Every structure is written in structure tokens, then in C-alpha cells.
Length: 163
Image (cartoon, rainbow, N blue to C red; front, side, top):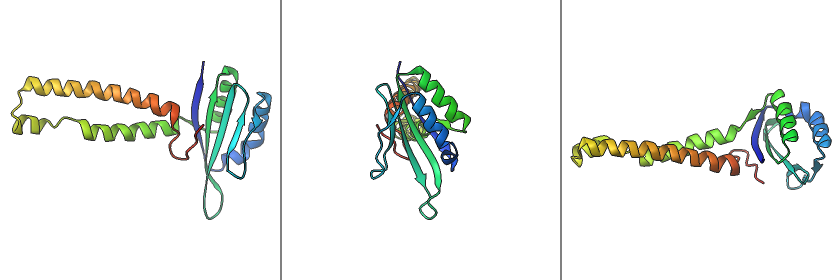
């Protein structure tokens, strides 16, 4: 089974837990594959990848947020890393929820039937209006599911962590 999650740590928390995190990665045989020049912070093994990205204050260089992308087939590693990060105050799927909400609001704005226009301008019967409303609600539900699937597995959102 594939496990894929995005996690955010607020503030400078990462710098307090980084040594423990590196030990956990070592226990699960994840090796450093990153590159400081490209600011790629990546650890991996054949079954798992952890990518980190850091949002820094441009004036003080202090870390504002730490973002982690976890992608693994190893249930043991997933459980260990999630328990560790949640214990440090991490928020799971932080980006996905925001992106899905924004995209769904945009879709609703564009696709929601205007009942007043249907009724007053087009003189549509109530049965047609009810049909359009039900159709919209069903399409909205399907669109929301599709967005959750798409953005839950491909996009990290703000902070841009990508595999």
C-alpha cells in the first residue's frame, strides 16, 4: 500500500527536532540524497522518500515553517514518521485542504446555476430549475472528490514540495 502525505511544522520547531528526525531516518535506512546548492532536502531508500522545504524570514533567516512530503510503501516507516512529526506539532495535509477549498469555490462561482435568471429571464419551469440544482449538487460532489484525489496526491501547494 502506498502512503503519501504532506505535513507542516510551524515556526522554528524543525531545528529543535532535526537530530532526532535524522536518527529516525537512519533507523529506517533513508539516506541523504539532497543538494544544498539547489536547496533540495531529500532522504530516500528504495521504498520511501522524505522531502523537506523551509520557508524562511528574508530579513532574519529564521524558519517560519517547515514542510515535509512523505511518500512510502513502508507502513512501519509511515507510522513512525507520522507519530514523530505529529508529536512535534505537525499539521497533516495542510496544503491539500486549502487548495481543494479554493479550487472548489472557484468552480462553484463558475458553475452554480442562477435560479433568479432561470426563473425570471428564461421563464424556466420549477421542474427544470430543480433538475439543474440537483445536477449542480451532484457535479459539485464529484468535482470535490476529483480535486481531493488530484491535489492530495500531486500538489503540495504553498511551499512547493514536489517529487
